[in-house]
Image (tube, rainbow, N blue to C red):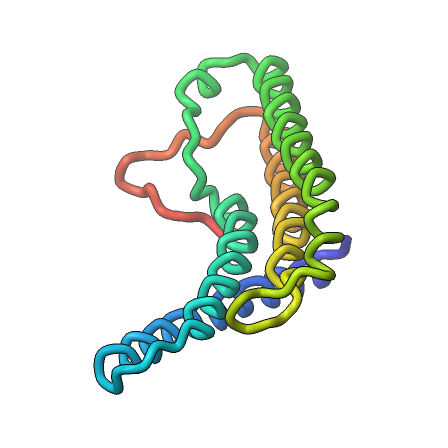
Length: 169
């Protein structure tokens, strides 16, 4: 994958997350206003916000990986020799990719069901929500691979100082 394609994909994912978050906030605000100001419930807005949240979380997991925002305990990793550190990076990436692969494969039957099952309030195919699982997992896997390659090439973890604990793009 070229750097231009990667940058484009990341822009699309980042933009989608912002739009999904904005939609989710507006939908919940409208639902609360409908219920408490106009005395009618809009369950379809809650369901739409839930769909947006599912998509947002699944995509944001990959973004968090890219920005090194997932929890990590690298005190031990900082003490490892270069070969052992590389082994730890490979094992960690392989285990993460295995988990995501199991999630995608295990979620496949859910996609089949989602083609025929409709949501209660919106009455749209549940596939719209369920497809977020493989899409999010595949994007997360891409970011895991990229981070794993970067750490492999470095050969040692970056030791963050407590003064500069910020997300790195």
